[in-house]
Image 1 (cartoon, one colour):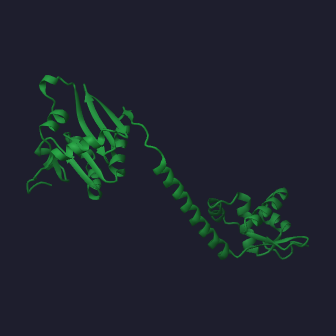
Image 2 (tube, helix red, strand yellow; image 1 turned 30 degrees about the vertical axis):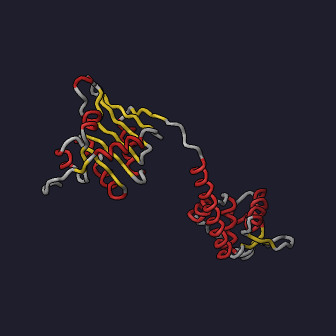
Image 3 (cartoon, one colour; image 1 turned 90 degrees about the vertical axis):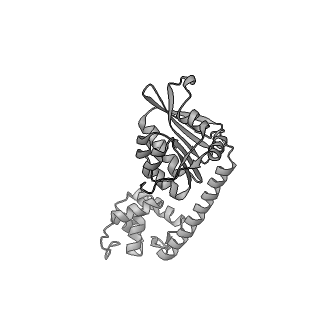
Length: 265
């Protein structure tokens, strides 16, 4: 009988799962594992071992042969065996590397060739969206962060994110007074009258009910403003912000570093 001498092979579900992750179908994974264990087998033997429907066995074997994973004896009845595992997986690694490199070049080209989108603004109405956007901007900035804030609670909330950003890129933390500068763990700056009046403390005759709690400028192209009016907080995120570069330059030109006391944290 054709099945004589063929012992049952236990199929490792985790091995099947790993093969499916690299592109094998369910049936292809089962057939390939069985053939690797048996070394050589007929379609009937593979059917008995895998319980794959007879109608799908030849279809699966043909697919694996076309992909170069198995070969057929060409006799009748045909017997199948796997191509050398080491050789086939070395080829897969080379093909995967080439495929990833091509994908990287195509995506990089898309990134650099796509025209800059028109300026878009988004209103951030919930605390979660504001919190998430602030942290993302601090983490993804590539060269520079300018942060204006005179709210101790906000500075405390994002102190770790600010500290991490300051270690990898240029960061200007502009505060309204020396007390806040002493409170923070990063280098702080203070501005002149323009920053004080327009960003932190409006002139009395302007009669503003709207106050700025935070202004975040990232890489001179993104901006995020956190505003408060009558106790309600709102965030405005703009990207790309065509005014961010000009405003960033003006702020950097005006600010001066704060000398902290020796007892500062």
